[in-house]
Image 1 (tube, one colour):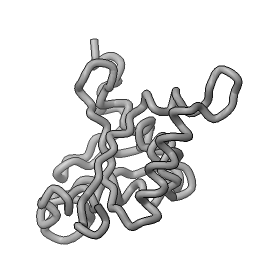
Image 2: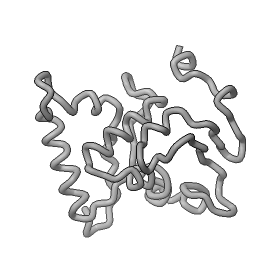
Image 3: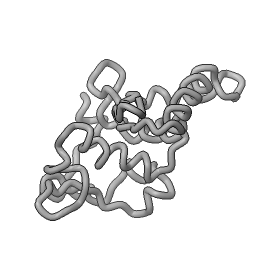
Length: 151
């Protein structure tokens, strides 16, 4: 996969986070198996993009951050690598990096303003101060509550 420069989308979603530990509080067999596989791929230079299969039953769009946190843990990635997999790497893999995926002149202005550093803790992505999507600013008060929107 690395030699062929393939992009791998393991579709780690929020549900994976519930499968890290078993009923005894130890790493589950699922976690050990998937973590070993993803880390081996990473160590051999396989390129990842973050994805969740959101929209299928049980996988909600607003659970993206939980999926990113699980991806970080399972693949043994640093927060910066998870963010790149969800943004610039995904845009490159999809062939749309000339329009989006990073902050640069002429690209779609999509970004978050956060209260603290996501390079330290990705969970801060759950509650951004401001979301800017295609140049439109949405503050906390302007956004819908994901739980209310799902009903």
